Amino acid sequence: MKHSSKPFVMRSLRVAWLMGFVCLSVQGVKAQSNSQATQTTNTTNTTNNVSTNSLGMKFVRIPSGEFMMGSQESVASLQKDFPHLALKRLDELSDEMPLHRVKITRAFDLGQTEVTRAQFEAFLKLSAYVPESIRDQTGGYGYSTHHDRNRPEKADAFAGRDPVYSWKNPGFAQADDHPVVNITWNDAMAMAKWLTQKEGVTYRLPTEAEWEYACKAGTATRYPHGDDPQTLTQWANVFDASAKPHWQRWHDNALTGNDGHAFTSPVASYPPNAFGLHDMVGNAWEWVSDHYAENYYSTSPAADPQGPPNGHLKVRRGGSWHTWPIYARCSYRNINAPDSRYTLLGMRLLREVAP
Figure 1 (cartoon, rainbow, N blue to C red):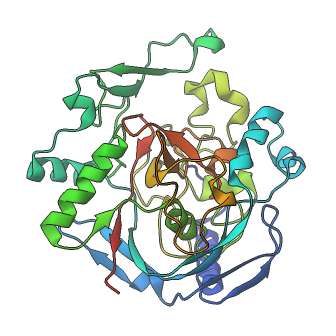
Figure 2: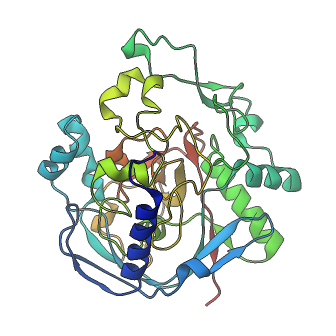
Figure 3: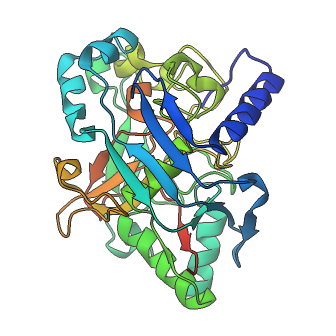
């Protein structure tokens, strides 16, 4: 989320470097997180390959290719850069292992940004769909200003479920160009289904593999831009100094940068990754299609993995405005029930490309 002291021209140079980097097969990329990982992509001029659908949503053509999915980073390495985290939290990252090669056999179009409030509202008006938080009358979650800031153990500041909260009201101000949040996996699937019927081309949520492939964009680092968590404020809307005053319980995990976004920011406020995608980390968590299984990577197919055939939980990826840097890594896996709705959870849609 946050701003950086580095001038924007430096950011642009960094993006240009990454764009050139991803256009070639990546051999022996040394990273703190995935040492000697190798990735190949069939990408050329991805930033010029953008199309717009009937709701004004922009999509970027993502090429087929191979990448190293997951992480093999040791607890010792993580402790070095995330010293405030308890060992238990680091041990919980084992579901990212083993690091394994995955092939994405077909190109696909992925939303250039997360779905915005304006785009979601247009879908609701045209389809007459009622979001789950309103339909079941239990509401969503929201940021509450009534929490006791003088009692850190009570200062989580999330309230809900409560009918007062929904995609319309996450407890903080949002403009039309902010990512829609407080939506369920079922809401996301409903929007994809409606677009499919309206436009005659298949829309859906990306798989975990497609999402991580698009996030890494030819790199083998923790984040699309590198390994250093302190540089995240230049590239993503995550938990930093602007959000810190609202969450006293979590002060130690805030980054020092500050860009003025205590909550969500307008989509595409930060430089894109090498595929031309914005906000792949930070701003809003993104639902993906897969069921969750802790040990799935040990048995998953090498080509186009679809996730476990069944399960009670769905995966979300990418982190949000409230996410600590350890959880904003491209390889991190988070989970929720498909009817969950949170003030930091949104979506990014995929549009299939004909063979």
